[in-house]
Length: 229
Image 1 (spheres, rainbow, N blue to C red):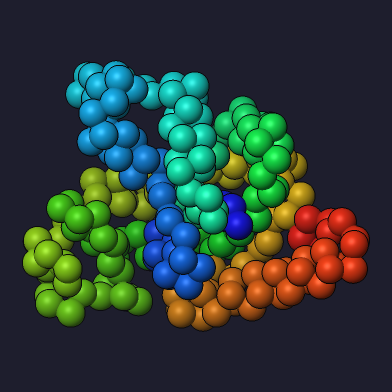
Image 2 (cartoon, rainbow, N blue to C red):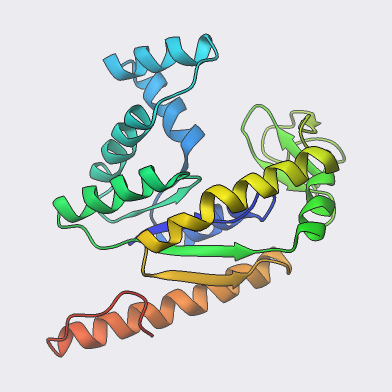
């Protein structure tokens, strides 16, 4: 299964990606994870990326697309993509690349959360800059006040987690992301405005029903329609 996680900033994509990765037994990667992994590999592409990132330059769609395909080919049982595709061009590239490799169409899960709830959440978000784990003081606080549960590093607040900046980011997300859904017929909306465990349970239910339907109709010799449940 190739699972795409969509949702506005602060919708909980990172938390759901981690939970789904454990449940499905497939890797979950964000765009940042993929870039860092390629740089760490020491490959020619990794060295090129390292230079771009050190100079603060924009990583082109071509480079990001190349890295995504490498990761997909290295994950035979599927993967979860958090933060990719970000544009309609990237979505079109992914759809075509999967078709050319005879890979199954991705399942896109969209976490729907009202803007006001996003602003409240992001104001309570804390991040570990060492291991990149994300916490929320309202829903998933750390066990130790102000420190990461995994590596004990002091948690920080992102500079762009202010109401004014968040509203700008939400407007940009809506403008850029909404046109992408036409590229993915299997687009599942999920109520992201609830406790993370409840969100995860809802996603599990939908994906389990979809998997059962596909398995049943494949046995009957019927070619399943994406997202038919």
